[in-house]
Length: 115
Length: 112
Image 1 (tube, rainbow over the protein chains, first blue to last red):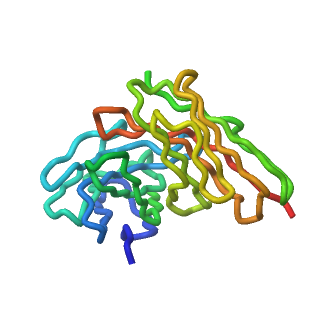
Image 2 (cartoon, chains in turn purple, cyan):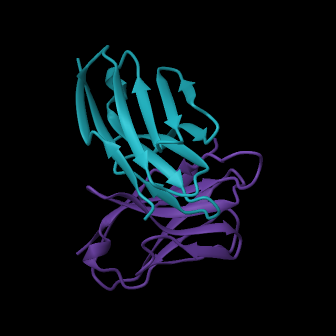
C-alpha cells in the first residue's frame, strides 16, 4: 500500500532532550516536506527536500534540522526541544516534474508535547 | 505578502444540505490551487488540484471553482453527509519554489 509513515505517533518529552521524528514513503517520491499544525494557524512548512541531499527552509525552520540521505526517508530532528515546539507534525511527499502539479500525500501525524 | 484566507472559519449544516466554502489568495505568481479534507487528528487528503486554466473541477459531490482574475476559489459540497464533517483546507504553492501556503481551514460539521 502506497503510504507515508511517521514515528512515533505520539511523544511527550522534556525541554532540551534531543529527539528525532522519522518519516518514510514508499512511492519513490522526490519531494518530501515537514509541516507543523497549530490551532488557529493552519499548517506551516518547516523544511522541504527536492531530492537526496537537497533540502531547504520553509517558513518556520528555527529549532529544527532535517536530513535526506536516502530518497525514502526524511527525518525531522529537534536538537533542543522547547515548549513552543509542542505541536502536531505532518510529513508529506510527492513527485516532482511532469506536465502538471503533483499531489502531496500526507502522513498520519506526530503529536509532540514538550514539557 | 503571500497569503491564503478562508471563510467561513466554521460552518454547521444539516445532512443533505449543500454548502460552499471560500478561499481567497494573494500568492503570486500563481500556478495551481489545492483543496484538502482533514479529519480531526489525521493528515490532510487531497480533494482536487486546479491549475490557472481550469474554472471548474468535480470530484464526486465536491466541486471546486477557480477565478484566477479575482484570485478566488470555492469548494461546493452537494448533498452533505455526516462523513463530510472535517476541516477543509485551501493550499497554494508559491510558483517557482516548492513552498506551500496553507489557509487556516473551514471546520465543517454536518448534523443528522
